[in-house]
Amino acid sequence: MNKARVEAFTDAIIAIVMTIMVLEIKIPEGATLWSLLRERAYFLAYLISFFRIAATWYNHHYLFANAQWISRKVFWLNIV
Image (cartoon, rainbow, N blue to C red):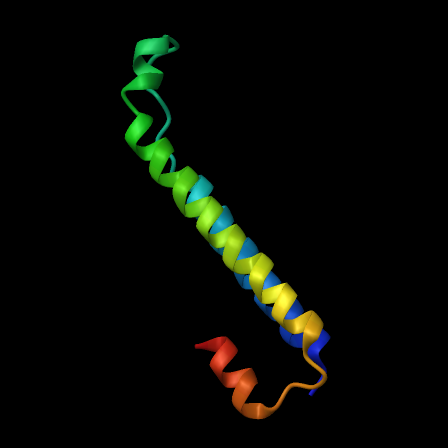
């Protein structure tokens, strides 16, 4: 199986997940620094999740760069 297709599929899924994460950030109610600070828990959770997903995405590309070929089993495990 072509490993570029598996990488492209995973890239698309990661892009969708990161987009949905951005859409879930709450907009502050006012234009003051205090209203921005009240949402810091959501922003911190977003940052932690973003960097965790980015690290997983990087490791995925590193793993697939070293792979010679992709079997059906690897393909399905990647989807899971």
